[in-house]
Image (cartoon, rainbow, N blue to C red; front, side, top):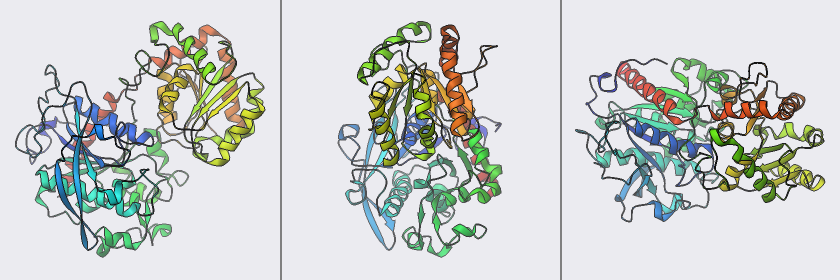
Length: 530
């Protein structure tokens, strides 16, 4: 992906100074999150900040957000937000996404000079903290969960419209608004309609990232009235299945200046009916604006040399210490403590997408190989019952932790020998990257980001980082696991395989640089369309 040109010389209309990015996400790790989007929404802005970008995050103030993450006084006490035929007042609070140092003052409303202190990447002690604006409204956001409410449509209209009204209140014009998933998909639509004549956003371009195309945000015509878009009607005459519904994901794709998804393989897959979730015709129409950028992981946090959740720290040069974490995990799971037994770990949602359908037919054949299986996750009761049955029938081999537990997840990464991720589809996946960083060898289906990150082990050349299978088929999955178990019998080969994975660079820095290139491309696209 080549965009050409430096940050200051891309557009004649842009003032000189740091690139200004407003990052919109319904969840952000360390404030409130349910999954991978929250991890991305924390790690990517921090990486952009290290590159000198003036990036600011805006999210709803959910009940899950701890009070100690927020400044004691509101940034804006009362901000009226249009919705339907009324205005809903919100309060704007501010927090900080912790970086290397404590936060310094941000010039909230400046568009004439540097908007954050010392954006020169070479400056000593440069401030790394990212401001997080939280939209507070008890009626809409004081809920025990982030998603899954009957009025989710209204809730995310309020949040997204408040983000734009906040920019107006601060007199801060972002160069880029980076939207993530269906919850924020109205923003590109609004900038081309309700806000198209607003001078503050005249030069603002939008980047829309698809994290999972299966979750699209489907509503009825009343939603358009609430959003102020009723006169524009439905927008998908070429997609019969969507002709009479409001599909927010589709609107983000249709109106954004640049569209991204979270791996190169997934960007190609969603152009097909198999993976396109009914939006593939629209995606094919806009494929010249569609790019795949692999997610990274926060390597400063996810580091076996410093992780506070694991019993024994280790690194690539002291891999022998890792054995103690396996023994500790076996004790925690109440399984026989034996360093020689292959221990397979699984972490994630209990759903068909994550490949649990493949595990059921092969579980007994796999367990007859003498392995131990530790699973952590929540989800569909059907799969929870499967795991409970295996735990009952194989009490010395299977342990299922049916909960969300970040510390335990870290101990599974650090203690398992093999990490199983047989997803039916996987836009990016973080588990396989974290597993490799911690020395657990992944066994994955070659789809989406799993295909982009895991290379098949070649015993002749000593290359590769794991084991893959192509077809979504139980026997193919079992065959890949058997290749892994056979390799495990040879300690030197296994240690080489672990080292290969641990040596991979899955940090956000490289991906963040690619996002900066795409931001510049979005600005040029916006300028050409003006």
